[in-house]
Amino acid sequence: MKTALVTGSSRGLGRSMAERLAADGWAVAVHYVASAAPAEEVAAAINAAGGRAATVQADVADADACAQLIKDVTGSLGAPSLLVNNAGITRDTLVLRMKEADWQAVLDTNLSAAFHLSKSALRGMLRAEFGRIINISSVVGLMGNVGQANYVAAKAGLIGLTKAMAQEYAGKGITVNAVAPGFIESDMTESLAEDLREQYLSRIPARRFGRASEVASLVAFLAGEEAAYINGQTIAVDGGMVMR
Ligand code: NAP
Image (cartoon, rainbow, N blue to C red):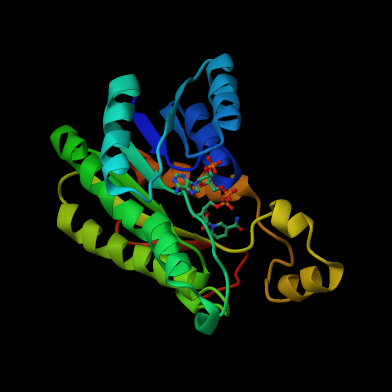
């Protein structure tokens, strides 16, 4: 059984990815920073369904904690063959109002974490001559967005990091790809005012928000043997909002 680490899988998109990967036969490290009880719930549900999961805690904004996280996963479930860099935060405001701390926190959590975790996980992947790294970017990393300079820079940075790592480790059985979700159904989209909801929907050719399971399906495919020839790509799951 191969091991997958999905960062930020206590809730949201990451949770859906953890559940899908477990159903596909991966041993899954369910990772969180603060939500211990929800993470335990995700892992318990996977184990109850006959899968294999364990919870792991780390603040991925901290480089040393990233190295320790890979060690912890290796200790409990085995060296991860799949790393999904999903944990992310937003600290939205216009550039002129953006505090240094808001810039740094978003860059550390959404971008530098992917570098630190990949660096630690790659060693085991090289030994196994198999590995998959999937970076969860965003459509705003492709098209920009008002009030999200820190988040957009981090998500665009992830796309560059993906291409650089994909080239460095191609030929070693390792692929690195990025997934760029568009608007996905969440607590946030549920609570949108009707006019704002319509405004967002009018920009999406599919005329609906995406489902977390639709992002998880792509992650599951990219993680598998069948996706061995897909490398360095950024694939949007956005109902056709961004067409390149
Ligand atoms: P979410 O529901 O807010 O969950 C965030 C996850 O990241 C949680 O598991 C959280 O752990 C973890 N996390 C946050 N800060 C962390 C830190 N410093 N160290 C470790 N873990 C941390 O997020 P989401 O909406 O599912 O988004 C998941 C990813 O998809 C993000 O990278 C986001 O940018 C991207 N994305 C989402 C959408 C969307 O529509 N939702 C669209 C495009 C891209 P705790 O539970 O312990 O706090």
